[in-house]
Image (cartoon, rainbow, N blue to C red; front, side, top):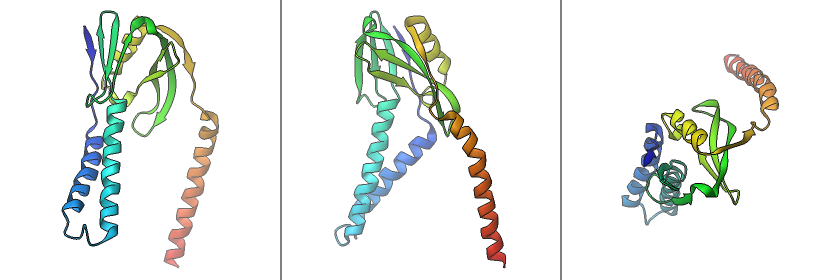
Length: 176
């Protein structure tokens, strides 16, 4: 039985706990029942904190291989997927871009009924384990390139230049 466990970055814990702590403080506030703005802000902060917890549980899956079965368990045990190895068609590699890892590849398992089980790069500190797990157990189904990569590559320098010029104009306006 082999197991691959995810880890959650400190920033994710900090943001999630800040939303939850802020909502608890608002719920305990003496102004909670007096002003509708306070309780609406408390419910908004609580719902954002719970949505972030759900997102962590949904994306950070522990992978357990036990004989002919694969079990994917969410970080807080809220999501559990159990599949036979035969039910999985194979894996594909999809190009992604995010603020933490930049441009990178994400491994995804594809089941027989075309459901996708994603393994985000940010969730696993040693992504080589995911690569070897997918390559040694499943058939390679292809590579999915990043959408609009060429357009983004051409537009980003132009947008950066225009925003720099606009910031310079605002600074010059404040001086004069």
